[in-house]
Length: 222
Length: 257
Image (tube, rainbow over all chains, first blue to last red; front, top):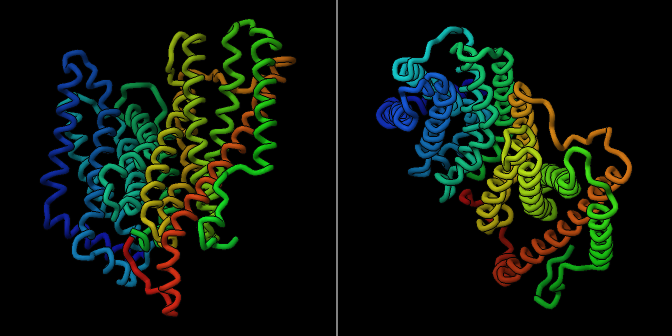
C-alpha cells in the first residue's frame, strides 16, 4: 500500500513539477487573494494584522480547492482514470499517494502565504512550533478530505461547481481550529493553541482512515 | 417486490391506510398543539409570548437532525445491501430533513429577533444547524446528478459515501463550533431546561411527538413518490431490458458513468 502511495505521489508531483501549474497559476492566485483582502479591508486600521490568521486560512482553503481539482483533472484526459483502475494499484495506496501530493503542494503554498502574511499584513510570529504543527495537521486534514471529495466529484460534468459546496462545509472545522491555533501562534489573542491543533490532527486521522477504506468504491465509479 | 410490466400495475398514489390514519392523527395532534401552544400554556416569565415559537422550533430541530441520521444509516445500509429501498430512503429522508431544517432556522431567527433583538447570532446551535442545511443541500445536489446517471447498478456509490459522512460531519462541525463559541458564551437556547414544567413542558413534548408523526408521514409519502418515480423510469426501459435478457449474454461491465 505504501509503495503504491509513493509511486502515485511521485507521479502526481512529477506532473506538477513539469507542468508548473501550481507554481505559475495556483501560487500567484494565492498571493493575489491576500493582496485583494488587503484592498478590501483598510490597511491603515490594523484590521489586517488582527485578521491575518483567518485570512491566511481562507486563502489556503480556496487554493486547496484549485489544487484538488487539478489533481483529478490530470487523469481526466486520455482515459487516465481507466488506466489507473486497471493498473492494479491498491486503491488505498492511490488515495494516500494523491493526498500526499496535494499536501506537499499545499505546504509549499502555505510557506509562501505565511511569508506574505508576515510581510504584507505585518503579522508577528511568536509560537513557531505551534505554527508548524498546525500547518502540518491542517494540511493533512485538507488533503485527506479534499482527495476523498475530489474523486467523488471527478468525472462529473458539474465538478467545478459541485466540489466547493460539498467540500467547504466539511472543512469548516479545519478553518475554525486552524485559525484559532494560528491566533495563538501569532500572539494576537490569548487562546490556548495546542488543543485546537489536536482537533486538527483528529480530523486528519478520521479522514485518512475513512478515505483509505472508501476510496476503492469511489474510484470504481468516478 | 416485483417489477411491474405495465403502467396499470402501478398504484398511482402515495397514500395507503397507514398514511391516512397517520395523517389524521397528525392533523388532530397539530390542532391540539396549536390550542396548547396559544391558549392553554402560559407565557414565559422572561420570554413572554415568544416562548410559543419554541413549541415549533425545538421539535423541527430534533426532527431535522433525526432525518439526517436516517440518511446516514440508509447510506450505510445501501453500501451493504445495494437495495433500491435504502437508496430511496436516503433521498426521502434528506429532502424532508432539509425542509424541517429551513423551518427550524426560520423560527429560530424570528425567536432570536424578539428575544435577543437580532435575527442571527453566532450561537453554536444556529451555526451548526446552518451548516447542516448546506451539507444537506450539497448532498441533494449530488443525489440529483447520481439519479440522472440512469444505470441503477452504476449509480449511488458517490451519494452513499457523502450520505454516510453526513451525520458524522454534522457532529464534527457541531463539536468544533460548540468549542469555539463556548469561549465566548455558554448559554444555549434549545437546551431542554429542567426548570421548564407543567403546561409548557407538556406542550413542548406534544410538539415533539406531533412533529415526529408529521415527519414520518411526509417521509412515507416522499419515499413512495420516489419509488413510483423509479418504476416509471423502469417501465420505459422494460422492452429494451427484455430484449437484452433474451440475448442471454451476461451484461458487459462498463467502467464509465
